[in-house]
Image (cartoon, rainbow, N blue to C red; front, side, top):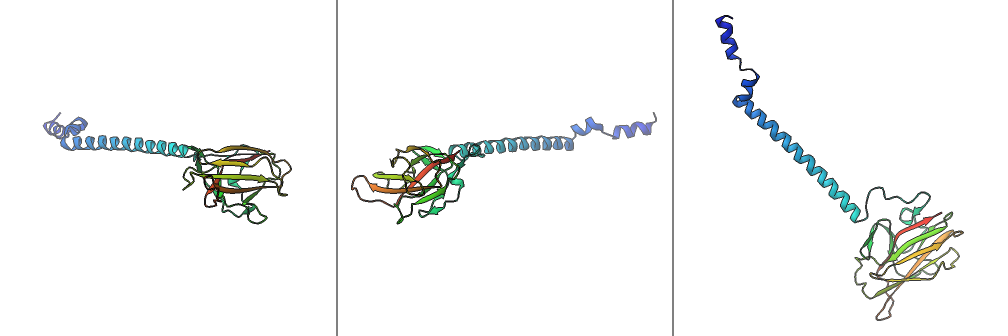
Length: 209
């Protein structure tokens, strides 16, 4: 090898030389820092996703909250009578979440009409947890009585009376019923005076074949 070739070879630092040079060290450090930042970002995204799922589950908002096949939640139906301004949203009754709930004003019948009514043609069974939402205001002494009836006004089962922290489970046979009518009346248990400023909730109200 000539002296010129030897000099050129000495001038080329090669991979090892570059890695040990100042520029190489800076580049390596930058790669390591970027990889570490990416790892932290991925872990943080996974943590946020997990927390979001847990919060949804705690509040009854887990994705895929579907009715059993052939059944339907009232919260997914359009009311045929809506005198009491029904709201379809998750509710908490006696510290338990009900993601598929119908909540409406407990203000008594509207003349000859119920508070709410739903088309239930083709279904045989109605189930729900009836109660006062935990976030209701000034409901400590409130008692609410809910009546379920057919389109002809015939009562379906006995009236259900609930109070704050004391819900009731309802199970009604609705075979042959066209319209499920629901009416709620409230009373102050201490004064015995009518009370129509609060809501009642039908938790996970479901109609099944």
